[in-house]
Image (cartoon, rainbow, N blue to C red):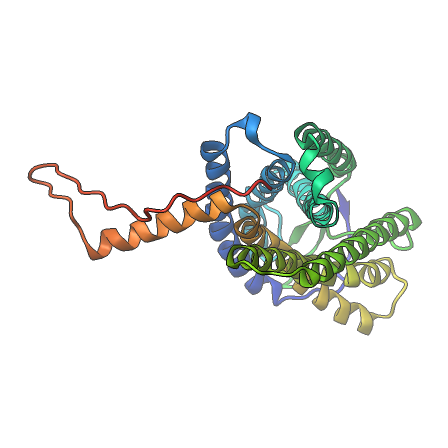
Length: 342
């Protein structure tokens, strides 16, 4: 634990903004991702999970890992950026933040590539035995990113600085860079460059998917519906990247340079304010990711729709009687719904 002076800039609005935003994301994210995981466990036998569903399960697990640490960050910002919890929890929170960010990027990338292959090479994709490949790719992603994130466990993650109110000291969590540290700068250059390389590949794949779908004739209503959902899925994946990940990585390198002392104080304050906003945007991916599943999986949509209609029907037509224990179940849909093989 290092002691630091109070000369570093601070964005005090975050002490109000973060507890509110993180609390909302925690509630919505835990409910949405837990429901997604429950649906996959109960609707899909493990042996019937194909490649893309395996990726979606792993993306959900990455989101839940981050969500379980959000209460730690809520406490931190509620106490005006003072880490009052055990030090190892600061390391854990930083580690899970890194894992969620880059596992999400990686799994969204392989989901996009899977859809790219399905659109551009449909016959080859349909014939491929993708379950083993999905498991193998998922293991590679987890091992690589967890190995990189383990660095956060060996870092001296906390530092002490004087409280600006003049009453003692406060303990910061992952808010101290040694001035002029070139290894820190190189790591951030590598992360930002790697992200934008992946982003431009995803952008290229999605543009090809959009062009291919728009060029295909849609003579049947069913085909038009499938095309519409595919286009929405592409737009949703791009939206998640553009809203959640791109702003943070645009700001990250200039912010790092300012933290390391390579920029003046006025720029440092402005970029630090922007950095706090991008951290909020970055955390919203835990809420937006479940939306992608609605466009990717027909069985998931069917189950969600049935539950929604069931809840509405139970409010409008309470047909159960507590006296006799009789319950009347109305069929929601007489037509069978076939699962999409995606």
